Amino acid sequence: MVRLADYKGIKIMAGALVNVKIDDTEMRDLFDRVMQHMTDMTPVMREIGEIEHESVMRNFQEHRAPDGTPWKPLAESTRRQRAKRGRSDKDILIFNRILMGSLHPQAYPDRMELGTNIVYAAIHQFGGMAGRGHSVEIPERPFLGVRDDDWPEIKATVADYLLAVN
Image 1 (cartoon, rainbow, N blue to C red):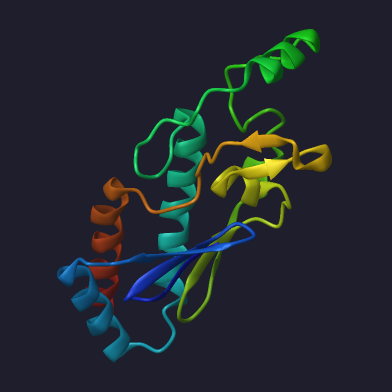
Image 2 (image 1 turned 90 degrees about the vertical axis):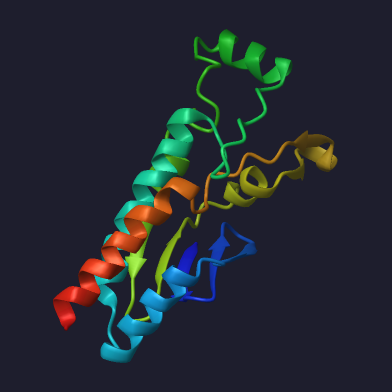
């Protein structure tokens, strides 16, 4: 889940937790100003949730991590398995769209969460050993996270919200 709960950091979870620090002084100042005027930031958090949901969907479509790193290609054995079933090997993590469809932003007065309850999401986000006897290594293919190109839109959303409440 992506949490914009405290302007000092963003927390990302898909069955595990990663902290991403916001170093942008302007962004922290905007959150400070909004928090001085409002205790319920649900409306702005809802908008940020939509921005991030669209961003994560782009990660799936572009087969890339939020930092722009391309996902590792599918293993040859996975490609063969998909071919036998008449399925494409081109769409990594989009085999049946269950994972993509499970992601929904949730806005709260002090945070936004974007995550999934799909158990296998964490192995794709962070990588690790899976399968019978944990004999298969799944490479990390992060899909949750804030992309650098999301920040201008998030800043504009918070600034617009601040102007509206003043």
